[in-house]
Amino acid sequence: MADSIQERQDDLRQKFAGFANEDDKWKFLLDLAKNHKGMDASLKAEKFIIQGCASTMYLVPSFDGTAIHFEMDVEGGTTNPLISRGLGALALQVFNDQTPSDILSVNPEFFRDIGLNVGLSPTRSNGFASLLKQIYLYARVYDALSKRKV
Image (tube, rainbow, N blue to C red; front, side):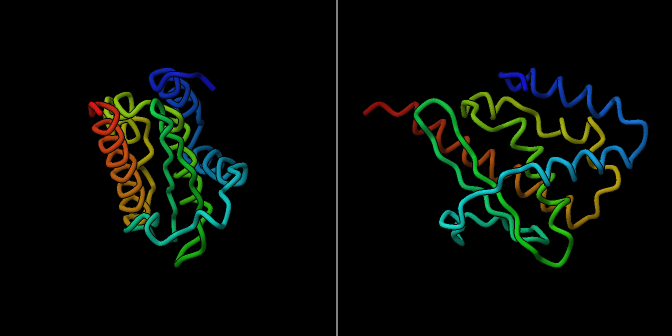
């Protein structure tokens, strides 16, 4: 995968444009879910749960002073967690290990522009929006902290 957010977005634009039909998109997301390594159970604390997801999604950030690394995992819930896990893994393909300012420069409409909103249930759409909101919140906090003069 490419290094910059722009390159990562370009890669995903090409992949989504190449799907022959909606089923290809869902297969791609399910493959992302199945190949996502998840995270250690010790990181699954209530404070890291993304509110608004049908499944229980955890997003744990760590900041090395330059880039934010995210750990994400999904457990059960009222629906099949594989779609939620695939959506989370897709978001991490764009945002993981990037600087806070680079994350904040991304228009969240990118995911709508590649057609991700088509076919998503309202619950999954809201959950994905909540995940993106949390990623941007962490980016704003770490961006502010990195600019503080000590």
